[in-house]
Length: 419
Image (cartoon, rainbow, N blue to C red; front, side):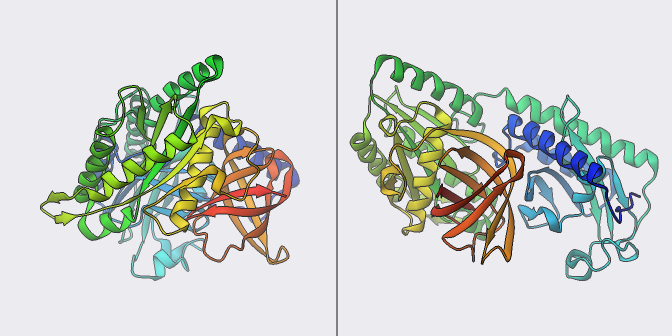
């Protein structure tokens, strides 16, 4: 069992911080956070439960502020604040951690998951590593009764982590989303960059749209994941039926899709988004769960805003989509609707640790910075409730500390303008 250090020297802290920067960079390059559920990863979780005869199995990725479950069986949550996880100790130690009885371990004996209704007693977690050896997450076997865990069992769990990583690498090469038939996130971005290069070279219009299904988590929680899958297929079908053959359509994440519209300006993009919004709202989804009607929120951005790459275009459309959600959902918003400089500079997709300070710096929340430019950033938090419209963002690895204004938000995402 790994023992948590009681103190660290400045050199130790620098090494830890440097390792975390490298780790997050590797995770960002993998570009797999918040991707759709995969049956292969879920199979690994079922194997963990079966092989070890335990109640909970998890395959997760861990960014700067949270543990996101790629697959989880035995717990209802989809993610957990990093500071509340057992797996933070695997990240800190950079090696497996085994806890035979959490009630007898000083690190966990008062943890809510131990003292509360989850009744966690046993934990074994091993690193999930890339082929280059970077730890991007964990694979865990968890039980509600104390138990032993022999070296052979730890070796098996480590092998299962390798199987999960092999599956992730295989999924990276996929061009088509298995559920909806749309392009995967990586394939969409690759093709989007080509369309933008052509638009810039030939000086023609191009617009991007990001859409997100409203209240999707509620659908899954109420009717189950099969119902959620049917909703996603119906949304994708409604969009594909109303797009041109030349338009690009992909699935960015669980319930988030993106579209590129060549030769379409801002006015045309808004009209296209409204057409898609109405088509989705008019659709009725049938299944064993009964009948469901859903809506979606849309964000729009165009090359006319000074954008020259897909990362910036999608970041702007994403921010506009959060603005549409905050304004009531089931509506469309343009990047120009936000309280930002219309000539905002380019954004770089990143994955960096950040800290949000407010209340005269008396309150702080850890965050993950997803995109960063000279005049703004997009960050993700565990819960944005209570975060005021004006704050300070600190990104230590960039030497950045700046005052910001929140221009768009949802439950976990903030679009920030500097100054």
